[in-house]
Structures are given as C-alpha cells and as structure tokens.
Length: 240
Image (cartoon, rainbow, N blue to C red; front, side, top):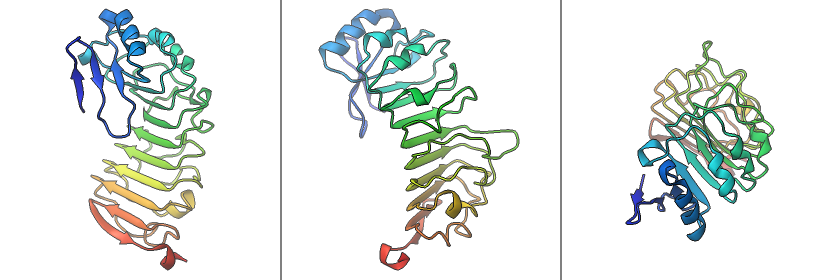
C-alpha cells in the first residue's frame, strides 16, 4: 500500500496498480478534503481511522458524487445511504461493520471487494463482473445460499470455511476463480458444473485442494495454479 501524506496534510494514493488516484478523507477537515478533491480532479477516495476518517456515516459522499472508486476499511458505519448517490461508481471495497447494501442499485458497478454481511442484497442481480468475497463462514460450512453476481467473470474467495464448492450457483461467464486461505476446502468435484467455461484456477494457502476430479477433468480449464505451483497447463488446441 503506497498511501502518502503530502506537504499540505492530505493523504493521497496514486500508485496502486489499476486503480483510480484517490484522496483520503479526514473527518476533522472534511470541507477542505471536498475542495481539494474537486480542485485536483480526483475520482477516487478512501477512508480509514489511521488516515483521519472517524465518522459513522458516509454523508460526505453527496459532495463528491462523481466518484468511481471507493475504498473503506477498519471503520464502523451506521448509515451508508449516501453511497447510492454515486451513480458512476465502478469499484468499491468495504468492510462488514455497516448496514446491508443493495448492490443492484449501482448500474455501473463492476468490481467489489466485499466482507460478508448477511444484510446485503441484490448481489445476484447486480452488474458486478469482478467479485472478491471475504470471510464467508456459515455454521454448516457450505456455500449454499451465498449470493454471487450472475455475470461474474472473475471470482475470489478469501478465508471461507466450506469444505466443498457444492451449493454455489452456475456461473456461465466465469473465466477466473481464485481461492485463498480456504483451509477446509477439499472437494472440487462440481467445478465443471458450476463454472462450465472456466479458464484459470488459482489456489493459495488452501492445503487440502488437490488436482483431482473437477480440476483434471474440467473441459475448458487451461491453467491451474495449486499451492503456488502450476499443476495443469492445456492449450486451446488440446482442449478442442
């Protein structure tokens, strides 16, 4: 993370790969942040207590409603309504200590980094194509009931506790699946069924995943990295 404090006391984030240059909003100087945001032509913003964000609402977003990138972490929110004013929002990362979000209300939202919140809705119907799901840990250790965007093309799981992929919906547009720190996950049998057009699979720190049924026999999978090692590589020609 390369967030730097400028001489004027503003925190700016410029050099993260593939991100919009972003300004850190500080509760103690909110009006100044809004003015600096517009003066410098920012389209991204972030909030974190370490960088001065200490409030429990997102009302300030109504003053920067052209934002396309929002990243909020390690904060507790009681009101997120102003998030819906960001009609051009393309990317959002947000922690779970907040009210539920209706993701279907964002027509242009494509990338979401989401910590599981049972009050969220509209994920299946959303426009999201790149979805990162953190900390899905149901009591039954199953994926059944987890909402996934219908048009998802790249999906990442972090620290989920299910033992099998069973229960996930069919994702016909999914091309890339990444699995990280899912230490219970062992059964990949249904992978061809739920992701019939998958091309790339990556797993890390998920020691029970092996290149067996579901991976070896997947008809469209060309590359699989399991445990940091490339264990499967097939060309398009070979698959045809």
